Length: 299
Length: 239
Image 1: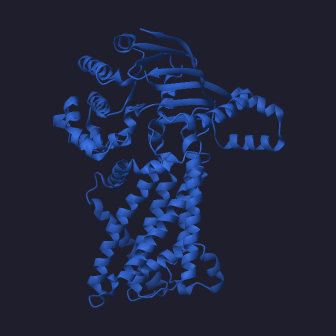
Image 2: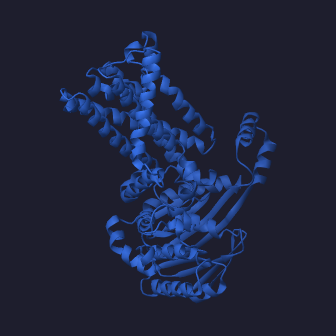
Image 3: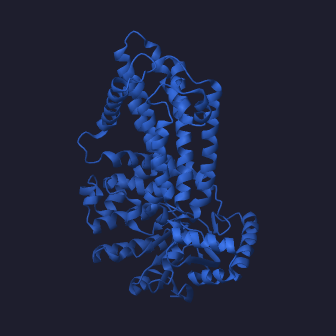
């Protein structure tokens, strides 16, 4: 009981003093639990963001012979397997001209999403050491994970574009401004969705670790609720209502636009997908700001 | 005289025992049943790592913090550095702060010495231009000219320590703290560290917090000693 009243007292005292004494550069007290500075200070630490992004990219490919070639081999092999199993064996039709491009474009974007979500959701667990020994805006770490995956994605996307242009030399419409805009929109929507779900899961892992298991499993399930293996026009009407909430549906379709030449999703579906991912992102960032201060004592 | 650090009635409370699934269920059930006995038991499980700590340190002062294991020395540094928040009380700082609670945490073992200077400096908020300009001096002070392009996983613990210390003193922070950092270095390097610390205190007017069990080191570098015992200040004296 004593400590509780003491706590309240200092909270009041602290907030009063914070306004009156301007000469202090930093004030730590129990009341500053909701400390928005972990996000606003990111700009001051932009060099750390660059360094952590570099570290995250490098950490995967140290002491490998093929190095960044793995970025091409993985989606390539996955697309070939999908092509064999789902088109040749099961006979599921594809959208657009080339079935290989149909699969590989979705595989690349989905790979970016899945890796980002998994990396962000385990941010507190895998960075326990740095978080508990160093004081810096913690939001930089999930941001660096996203940026690192983004860099890999852009590399893969460039290769994909080159392959496509070589395959269909006559149709250079692929790289028109509109289609590039669609790709950028898809990338932004996917990143925002990945940050949102990842941060929600990461914040909850400070209390129970179940969420990081849940997320990696959930991402596997969401794979089937996204038109990657099948074209979106095969989805029955009554299922559309549910699938609309999945931002990846519109993201994948937007991303395929330059390769398939037609958009299946309507603008309202894109809007609802964007709204869902934005909402998740806001929830995730709020939870992150709340948990990041006390996480050191819990993880 | 301006104050660099001021602590007012700082408490830090930790919980004993495991915190996991069963504990969550127990606390949920207690919440639901509003069992008064439960809260008694809860207070038994809590303990204070720091109790009612108040002191202030002037700018340019060098303070040694001593005490037995578990006296709360590292917790005190954690709170001052801002890694974790106090349970109650206020900590005020005037000036930027840097130091190692654990030397390993801000390095990445696959990066070379040079790259790690950038990474560790970035963790302390330094800018790219400043680090690039100073990286030569950092390497020189650490005597790692031949090994600057070697991944630090191949470094010996002494080399590692020299690099860490060199980075810290070349960053332009007003408050520096050292937590048992001198445990590994050889006699020659320890002497050099002490000399550099004296320069930092006397000519650069840095505020220094030094946690150590080495009484001799504290006597030679610090002007004031705060001794902690079971989370409370047992003595605070000038030297």
